[in-house]
Image 1: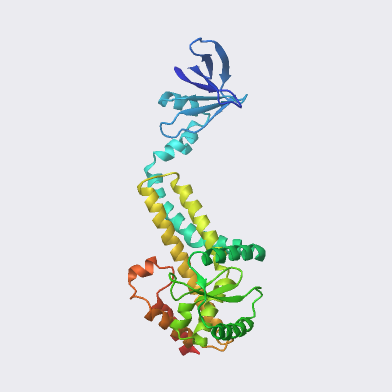
Image 2: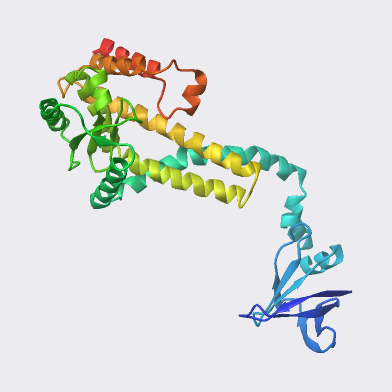
Length: 347
């Protein structure tokens, strides 16, 4: 049997056309078209990859040269023939590729594996990652983030100076009551036309309240302190670092499984990544709520104060739907209010 292929010299991309002549226990290699004998290679003196569909086969010679040849069933059989041919055939990639049993198993197991990765493995790895990020790195990232927001969507606060001082003093007692090791807790106030009534925490302990949120609750110190506890929870549980790690890991996993795809798959990957990250965020928001409810008493608050401020926020938003629950990064406000009321009742 005679086959044509390409011979790649070790350490080089240069190649020449060659001809392989198969014998029972060896093959001879000739140049094309000169038919100069290049060598005789006994079985056991070369390595070959496993068969994958109709892809060409690679034959690695002992001197590092590589032969690539388009194979047929006869060449596949000759290359794969071993002393234990039955075992080799049973476990070869080609046999698995053509096995209906393995195909069905992969259809069932692959989605289960992806669910396990996204739901358990990635979040667990993110927690470990977050614990190793030094505070100095969090501080630099936080300062750059706030600076970028200040040049885009945030403006200096328009609240009266005495209001900001009064709230800052009140928030200082909350920070002290929680007694966390996290350094750098401080409160900032900003005006915004785009973010509305909102508050957010940066990894270094900077917590920003928008003027619109302060005005929404009519400067109520207890309600704002309840929101502050929620944001402190984000910092204490290192949610920002965990979310960054989850986002990076999720993107890497999706890219690994689906590869360099286009068209519909690109749309699917983008939508899936968004939904996955939002589900992670819902979990983190719930953790922050739990932190606020646990520390409410130490800060001179009750779960009722947290429920009240959530109701104030709910009154400023359009009605929620089931689709909102899927797409929103926050759990349903109604559910969060009911949970706070239940915590109040149990006290």
